[in-house]
Image 1 (cartoon, helix red, strand yellow):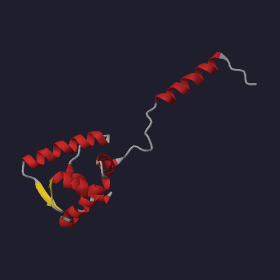
Image 2 (image 1 turned 90 degrees about the vertical axis):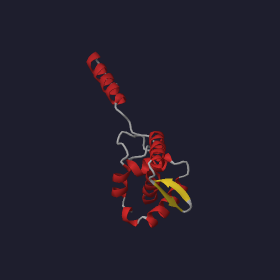
Image 3 (image 1 turned 180 degrees about the horizontal axis):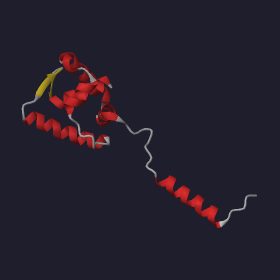
Image 4 (image 1 turned 60 degrees about the horizontal axis):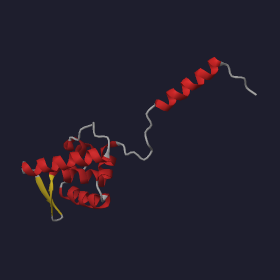
Length: 122
């Protein structure tokens, strides 16, 4: 049997408390813009399909790095919900400024189409 003195017990409790207070990143939490965007769409497969159509029509922007740069998505967005809200606002702004594109019969905001392209490239 191990004898614990008061100092050893306090050290153990301090260590446990410190470890328990460290931030934990869920294994299911998406990382990076493409994963966050994929998780933000209610139907990621449909978004990817439209994204592929967009990339076929706009091959010059068909790299993940270029799409990320053109999207200019704030780095502070850490959840799919926050990305969804940002993309909704960005799409409204694109429509208001005439930055629209037609993809497979759908009229989309430029950043909305680019976001779908990034989802397609995944």
